[in-house]
Image (cartoon, rainbow, N blue to C red; front, side):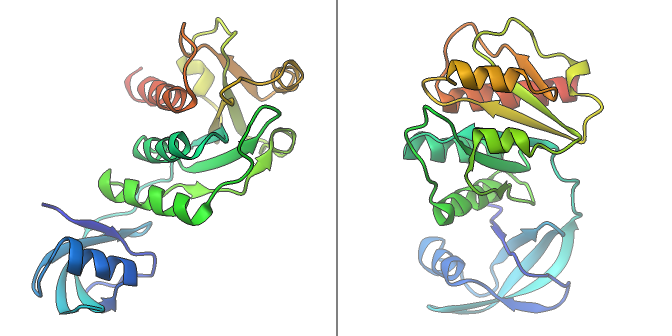
Length: 236
């Protein structure tokens, strides 16, 4: 089994490092690894094959042996998601990470029932999903923002892809070109209000597109939308 763990600090080949309390618990009590066990540590600068050189119940030290993966370019796909209840929200963060988004932007709209996000928990979920999906950089989780502020502060070179339940437009390769980043906007469970839809569709950076003939739950919509964009980007 190839064990990969996120190491946020700088890593230098042939040096040693102590690992976090959380990872120490995981290595000692869950994985039950021993001194001499091999493990991979990664961060935005790459991935290193490493070996446990010291192991006690509350202290694990590793040696970073060899760099085995170079850094990758950051994802240009961001997810702008209206907050939903805890379980689907956690599922959304996990799946969006697995599918390779660069940022997750939690949004409050008129019909969102949930108004805040547990950032510590969210960070833990995206790091674990990054470890398991063989990636190097966990998505950045931005502060919770109101829809109107999110739309007002969109970067100049960002294209906003709006998964619109009323749209008949299929997403095409041309829609994804000539933009520094792509933000996918997914509405709340009860959809956006008519006034919000008007504001979204009035924005010049917005491209509405049809996701499905059916009405999808937020977590299903996220998986469908990002998978669709990845497919168009990679295969057309």
